[in-house]
Image (cartoon, rainbow over all chains, first blue to last red; front, top):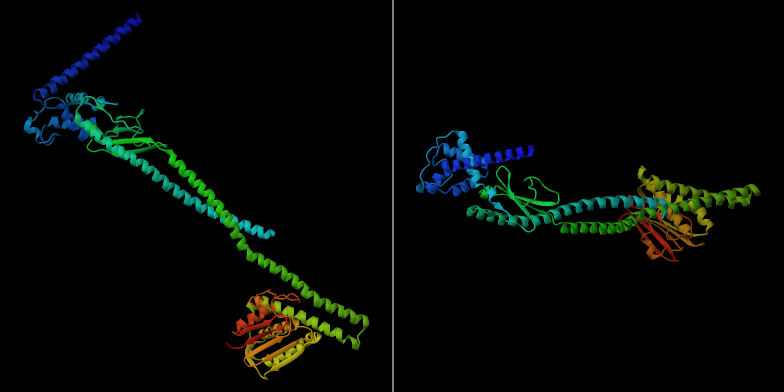
Length: 119
Length: 383
């Protein structure tokens, strides 16, 4: 009986966690990437540019946060020509914690560590 | 080899070998360190070359945007990339090492990467040190030390023998000197004692004149030995009193002094002296000069031989008709303890004293000799 209770508990926790993950991913998709895809803004390219410039997730996160709080050309990592093709982003009206969580999700989504493999 | 020689040789060898070993050890260590660095630098160069290839691959991977980034792997070395905060990103190590950690038997090379392709700010390359060239180097250094040690030990031994040769010669001369001294002292003392006994036995009478003459000769011989030895020993401390010395009178006095000895050998004496020959000279020096020349001429003369003494304002010469000196012995005849002829007693210090006096007054000494015919010693007062 105890074993059955433990097994059911594990199933409930795993199911809840997956639901939460899906929810966050969905939020990232709807809150950020959806618009990027619609405007054909290359998210992967932007991430790689940040990565090449700032190296660590913490530094990338800080730089992105700085830009998202005040989206200006001076704060952007992208070259001036980029804004000839793509519009300047609107300022996001979200609280800092939420914004940082999205940035964290964004970085995780494109993290190179997950893509690197040995032959 | 004497005990003291062995001790000196051993001490010399210990100091020589010790200092040589120390010097060679330092030199070998410096050489080994330098050569080791060169070998490691060469191996590091290979890592450096590999790092450039990896950097190129990192850039390609970064720009590819692929979902599967295949990290470059080297055949005999591991590599890893680290972000700007020195956190490990990816690599081929089984256990990711710290960026600044150095392992004893591994060669590490860290290169800073910029721009940070794939986020890599540092690239670490590491491979086991190839010990074969280092072992070969160690073997060569040890062999060099062994051969050098052997060579310098043999050289040191011969040098040591060479260095103690003068000491050995001095010891030999000292031994001879002691033997000669005891012999030289023994002869006149025995003569004196024997003749005194004869006088005591037969009583003092007209016949004892000969015994008294022998005692006189022996006593004078002893006195001369004492004077010569004192002169040699105290020469450097002796304070000379330079006076106008009448050499003619002094030579006459010394001839009288040696007359008993000459008479005993029944020598035929010829004297040719200018009446007043005055030199500025210390009297003791002059006496030593004249005595030694006269003594040698009497001692090495043949019985009934000729003793020719000549004094002028230019030189003093003593000629004998004695045994003579070989030509090859003439060069070293003035060295202390050198004796060209050992048929007679003596220390071999007579001509050394004559030479010292001659040098002190800037006189010139000439020795001419023919074997079995005689010797002429001439002291020229002025050059």
